[in-house]
Image (cartoon, rainbow, N blue to C red; front, side):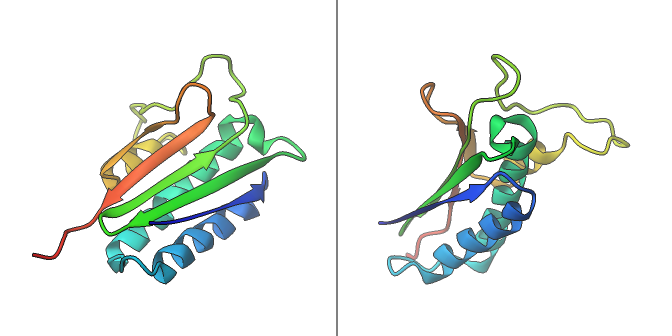
Length: 138
């Protein structure tokens, strides 16, 4: 198993940097070769989760950060975006029924469609995780 993590400033430009970090880890992992489709999915999911971190948590406040963790083994990848606390009390990431003409609200829908599984981190941690599994050789 390979584990990598790094922190990013809570700035919009950090979303692209987080995508590059995740893609680089997946492509360089010695234990497994991630299919390119998995790399693409992981990049998009990371982008959505980091954007949400900036928009909905204190990670987007001046001087704050978020941290991206990636764990890769022969079965797949687990990604985590650790954040500062949410801005609204008791708010948890959840799917919303976004109107087709809304400019936002579809990020977690995409995560839900692309990830094998996703959810919030444990109650004492702020953030969201995702899992992407890939087919095993026979």
